[in-house]
Length: 110
Image (spheres, rainbow, N blue to C red):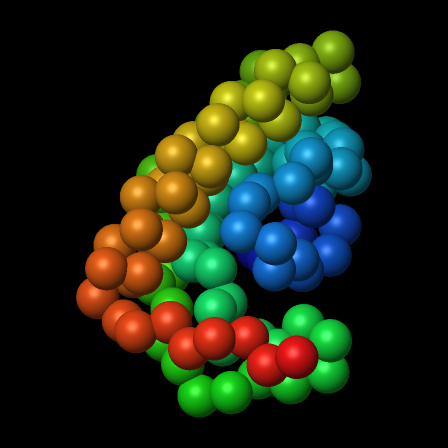
């Protein structure tokens, strides 16, 4: 069994949006003919970005349905990336709004 956890943006970011994906995770999944299992976290409102300090907070984690790579080739990487990005962005926006409506977001420290 192969398990691999990858941040498709190439890093963690806390800017309120999902950024452009890198190709590596998608190439690996297609090469191994293994499904992708997208996991979306809401924005980390409790991360003080300048200090890289996490205060106590809450997130919503959503596991999306697996995305098959069966029969896909390297030529399908851009389409797979776009479809995955779209699904993850839609979920990120809705769950981040849900969390913002539920939790008092503290003001960022200067």
